[in-house]
Length: 427
Ligand code: PA5
Image 1 (cartoon, helix red, strand yellow):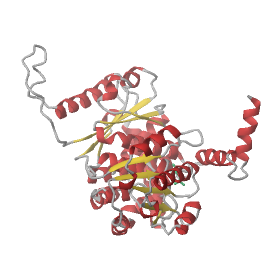
Image 2 (cartoon, helix red, strand yellow; image 1 turned 180 degrees about the vertical axis):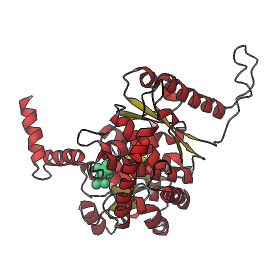
Image 3 (tube, helix red, strand yellow; image 1 turned 90 degrees about the horizontal axis):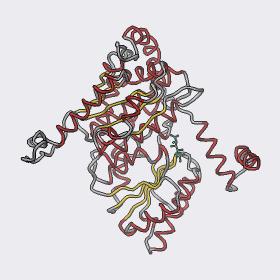
Image 4 (cartoon, protein in one colour; image 1 turned 90 degrees about the vertical axis):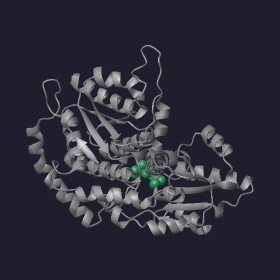
């Protein structure tokens, strides 16, 4: 993964971040890196995620999925327990179909289950806590649908969960194969683990290459943002946020990375949105969103930086020649060439309007490239969290909502639920 921060630097047009500021910030990056290294060595909560390229066990994951014979995988999870698998499945060329059941919209759940041949479907149910209401509810509905279709769901279900919790109990009661969520790895940092890799392994994806890509980013971590692509991204985004660039639009120029932008949005929002700081992540897709969101990023409030991601090499498709006047410039070009031109035009148009952007380049959008991107953005996020001095690995606001919803459904006594009831009465 290569990062180019040239268009985020201060210039006549762009009030970005100056080279001198970054040089000063580099001392704090060195301190942050020392804390990250110590956390990684001690496998401390959160930092342990950065050890996954070494600690993940692709053989154990392969062994867990080998007995499963399916054409479709239904990943039942939410947030960090779903977005990693969705990203892996949408980015890699897998030989199974993967669907994610995260939301509990009854119409969607019904429609999705009705559309599947359940006799050829496997379920991977994922919950680190093992208590998340949406995940457990969707799983109960999905297994009931399998029962109704005469399919033995116990033969077609794989569980990934923590050491304790309702899901662990359920796996034990039905003797379901179960993988552990690695200790110290929060949901949104778990893509390179038993949480998301089973989808890749089941679909014939190159898990080793994914981990190798991640490992190459891990090896590049150093005490300087000028030598570490992930830290260059994290530190520059932090410095821009401090200067008022409070929106970060993630805009990959590759259709298969659209879900990656969604994964990034969760990582960035849930990790950094604390104590009044953070950056609002926006999900965009090049070139599609040049025809919508770009107007805002270029001419709306001066608060948005754009992250432009592209592969250097991609399978291409020639554009046929035409003698139609006005279209001849397209003939002989290619869709990939056009997409690259759009990428560069967007970058230049933002710079001309004085709006900062950061360029992220991969060699290719493949398992190795995705491993680089996932790990690189996780490391960038952890560094940004250190610079903001916030508890990156906690998500109290998310937990508040979880407890409130459980309480409202009678799943326990939670003061958060009482607060909702009180508020409802006030309305
Ligand atoms: O990143 C996080 O911690 C969250 O998004 C969780 O992944 C999400 O809330 C699901 O939690 P669990 O895996 O416990 O079901």
